Length: 285
Length: 285
Image (cartoon, rainbow over all chains, first blue to last red; front, side, top):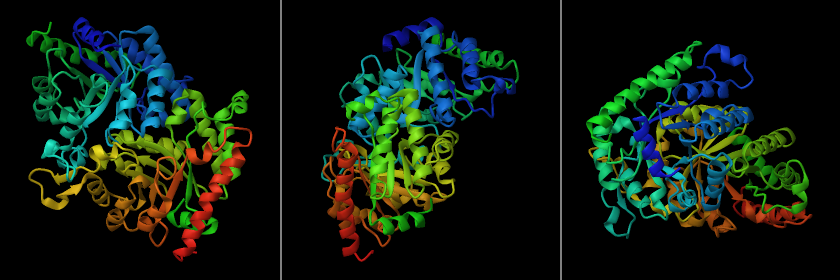
């Protein structure tokens, strides 16, 4: 999917909501556990109930790998179901991969070709040659971790970097996440980059938008983790909206009873309505 | 497996070799492609031919995920085969995972419980709460990326960090990889940490050993990537050896003919003999 197609969907659905499909068998309704593939059945019900309210689904691969082969199968069935039934949806494999060049190519094949996701999240620690293999895929998007929503983001991401000894002071005196943002813009096919920026750090969006004014930002941390939608939009939106706001637990675990899909829809609808108001107020619609 | 059991194996086998099982279907002998599970058959042959010369096998998950469900099945069969037939082997899932707390717990379950690896490689970018869930598993090891073997290591890992604005200068003026090493030592159950340090940066080992004198280091980059075994050992060994030297392509693709396993054994034997000499010269044996 191209970025233009994503923007068109945002306009059409009056929504920039991404729903995280982080399925934990201990949290889903008990009656599903009797079925052959409870994870897929749960996802299918959530997707059917919410697809018109969101523009994106984001399964986090950890929740599938934890169930081994069966989990990987559920992931495959989930992405196939979305691609076949709702091809207008922007799909994100939240995998946080990254390795040396030839190995990253294998990861890119796994997510872009074998599973046919539109995008994958990637960790920046190993640098340019660990990310560029993902960027080489046309109409696929690489969502680079910049400033994450967790407490540990302050361990390294916000450390001030002076640049390498002997190197010019190009990147001097900036937090690591800013160095990541700036450096990534110099990589080949960097137009295929998006970035993860946590909603729990809304005050950082103003600074981030100075570095990547046009890029889409995938924003976790609204809801369960405490981030505010209006704050994020205030500082993070650009003329194409430029935001995908993720909610996982707040939507998919709204109820763990037989009505779980209806309740998930209710929660998604609340967010979509809030988004529609923001889009109207900012004259995007 | 405990660290003491690993050290015992190193002594017994006079080897600290780790063989990377990065199986690419385009590189393995053609006759295997006719079998039902070429990846597993390839691994099985390599493992049977080399298990007495190495102390560890390291499948990189990218090479399995690239083949989807069948690939994940090959990974499962490979780890099960090693655990059943050669339980003395230290197994490494080279997965470079890392996510927010509850999600990292799912990854830890995937690799430590479902697949039953002894260890997994983890990326540090998301900080403490992304790594500690792995560290909570008893007799399991978390191998944190510190200084990797690729060119991109110089993009961020060697950048000088001054610490966070307003914070004390505790981590002031150090390269990011050193900040990662130092910070990780303060995490809960940090005795379960090992580190990835690339052989292509042998001159860095002296500095690294000042920070983590006792930890095991997993060292990629000897051979194909140009690192020198003797240089790494000179600066990186400690009194328990403290090194696992990985070789992937140089061993497993020594031949792509019917004799591939024998040729792999030849290459592994060369490295093992070199290691035995080093161990003897350093009075470890």
